Length: 418
Ligand SMILES: [Zn+2]
Ligand SMILES: [Zn+2]
Image (tube, rainbow, N blue to C red; front, side, top):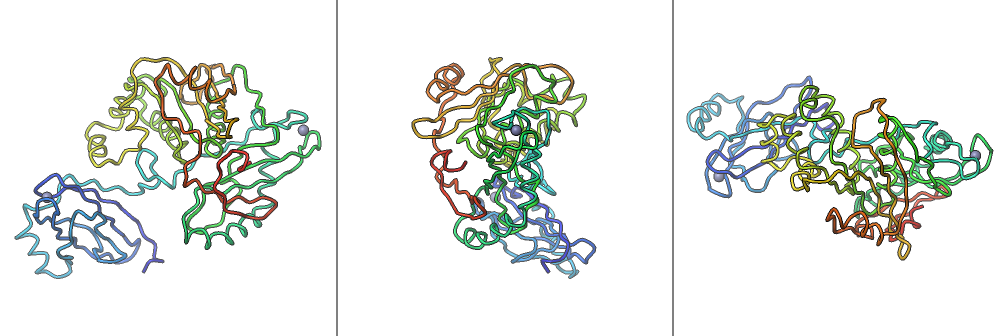
């Protein structure tokens, strides 16, 4: 049954009698016969029974009640006329309430659990971030061509470690350390790229990897750029930090346009917001965005839907974080805290750029490095940002492929990853 084409929908609902919340999964077969029916469930909180209509109800791998705070009393199949009648007669006033049904939650960055949404590394030969240590030419294409050339051996190493690792814990990330040659000066350089560890055993394409580092990483970005370029730069730095930082800090008073423009062009605003939320795929980001932006998001999504989603705790954490943000600041910077023992340091991208849609409007940017203590004193204390971990999470395990051999590592220092 499971290899049929299926659609998975998530249902969030409340008990017919009290505020107890539950969750169910509906499996729908595309182009096949689907059984109509549902579940009679008993609330663990008040003991009342409720009925929730869901296709293909089952007690195993088809549609099911996920939450443990409701007990399934009976699976109802509308194929039988008497079961249909039973629901009509006895459960007319005992329907589960406030139901939200979401199709494709795993791809929606606005919501929690959007594990399928992925940021993108946009190769652009004009960006001076990953540059040759010798001649300063952009080396993005060279690195990606090298990954593509080696993708079969990467996949075979991945496959070797997959069975071993997934049985124990699921690693977060897979890295690839290699070297190739700069097309401009023919000098060799090392680079590190990475991807989210795929816990489902599917093979990688080279474009799923993100370039994160190269020999003598020393970006040359100080200057004036369009918003289009600034947004791409930020994307590349955040991706780099997703691998080597213990924390990414985003301080930007605003997300894009003012409120009236955001409401006038909701798709533009939501695209920008989703782009930003997707950058946090590796769950290392802490944000400081003005509280007013929380209200803006609420307005654009629609108050009623927003509050329902919020009520079920379905919103992306970053949106929740905005609700408790400080109101008054105009500072803007983006930073990655990089653990390296005594030599831990912070990379900072700062300037006039707010999180903003791509346009030809000009912004200025500066890249700096400073030690963690100075950064905390000079950047974080004034904004009362605390709790910055100077080491990786204890469960930050990485499958590292170097010299075409893979190992499972638990890095303490950034040097162990690169
Ligand atoms: Zn109840
Ligand atoms: Zn070169």
